[in-house]
Image 1: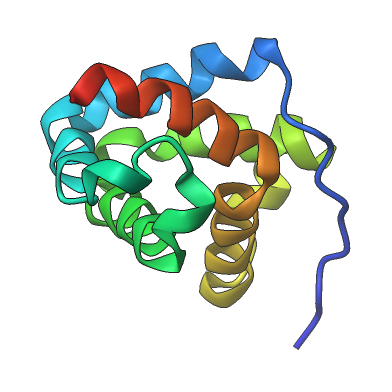
Image 2: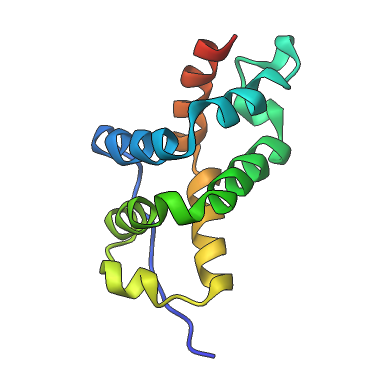
Amino acid sequence: METTTYELRKLEAKDIAPMASIINRIGWKDFKKVFQSVEPEKADDITAMGMTVAFDIVGIVLANYEWCQLDVFRLLSSLSGLEVKQIESLSPAEFAEMVIAVVQKEEFKDFFTVVSTLFK
């Protein structure tokens, strides 16, 4: 099995648009459910929310993959420096690892910490 090597760059403001596009295609209500299930005293710290929230987000994206596939490819391409065609050609395991790596990035957690306050 050939492994694709890449390094994910830090998330930046320009990444909000593709993330919002993905969320819009999926529907905000699914994300809202994730954040409403978090204990109120921990809502300001996504790190305290633990891996459950991260995997819930990955699960939502993968469950709705058909609707947001191209947006996900474009976001991952921008973050990794790989071409969209290379992202499309990743093995399912490599693709899932990349999506998980993005969700685990500190900047992603920070972004969703702020956004989650809208769902309270």
